[in-house]
Image 1 (cartoon, helix red, strand yellow):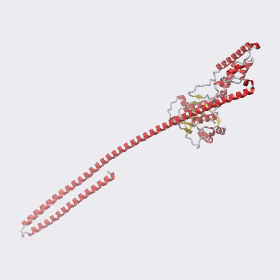
Image 2 (cartoon, helix red, strand yellow):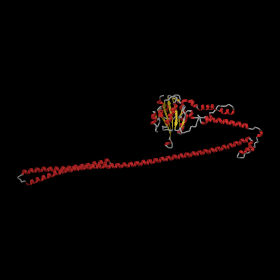
Image 3 (cartoon, one colour):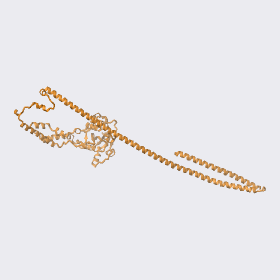
Image 4 (cartoon, helix red, strand yellow):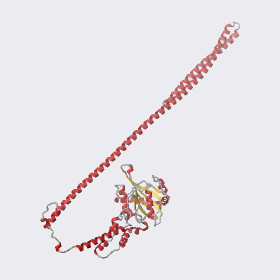
Length: 492
């Protein structure tokens, strides 16, 4: 199988087991640098050794993310499932994979992570969270172990109540046996000791060498290391004191041996000092038997076995009834405490919800106030702009009117001046005409023709003056109309 297609294989496996619905990853086949520096939302600080180790992984794919919401966002929990391809030799593959997963868990945005690592034609499943790491499954064949893994991680066998239960059920389904059921200190001290060592030491003279016993126990303790060889990886638990001190068992074996020898010596001394002669015994007083009971007991009960059995059954029933009563009280007390815890959690959630709603209300009020203030500032700005625009338009309008008036007055003044000259000429002609005698008829006729021409010219000037006045009034009206239309268009 090509390494770039490994994420498809794992997605089909998860879909077959019921963990995903659609075989579409969040992202696929990212390089180690992309996974470390781009996909991670945390600040990444790695040394040269870690950077070299991470550079050996490739085709990083986030296949799915399962979330469990908390009371607040900071308490949200999630499980992310990845697929990664590596290329290691068999002597170091498991340890390097566990180290890579432990390092990447610090920079991934999840509380639990499950990673399918492919090395050549086999793959292993690694588990890590904020408390534990270096937990691996057995190496699986890509082609042969498909159905077995699907059966093991079937969603019907996995709890979805919390992220921790989902993670642990997945882990217990496929992890190595020594990761699931590690040998405890007590089992290492007593359970692995051969039974013959105790029975024969007490019942016969056959002696066992302590070194032989220690060697037997040590061989049992390292059985998994022997079986897995180079693939053995010691699980790591962050912040939890290691409870299984397997490799320093000598002191415990010496203590057990000393206690057994001491018990045997005490038993021998007691047997030698015991006197079997009848005169050494004193007859027991039967009445002393009843001194051990707080209540009055009929002596006949101790003489009749049937009565004794019935009396013992009665006492047992009384004790059982008392035990059941105590258990019921403990159950009720536990239920009451659980109810109080749930009520406190509900009240806390309501308080947080009320605080969130109050914060949202204050935020909405602040945003509304900012919106109103922005609207008011915008209105003031528009008002100022409109006033400025109106002032500009009005100044332009007045300038045009002033220009029209100036040209009109100049032209009118020129025409009036010309009209005055014509009237003056007409007056002079009339004066000359009145002074001429009848005999100077020809001169009078010429003056009369000149007067007619001057009169016609005067009429033309008067009409021209009227045309100028009409044109001036028309331009002013047109300018007023255009000014009003411009104000209407600008909304002023």
